[in-house]
Image (cartoon, rainbow, N blue to C red; front, side):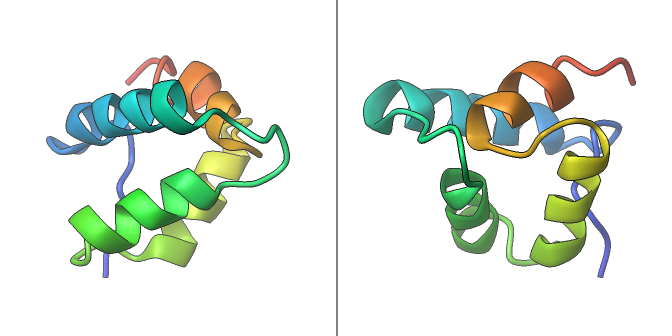
Length: 75
């Protein structure tokens, strides 16, 4: 399985879903629960664990960090 990285065609869509989820539910500043849920629910063709590791390698250790550090990361 492949990871959902910032050069993937579906990445921008994921970032939009994450932004909306954070706006609705907030970020607990400790976990990637929203990112994990969105990946498992909307992107089952991607490796969730591998994608989470990718997010962490780009400075995304909680959902809001994924939004600000990874979604804004240069392609």
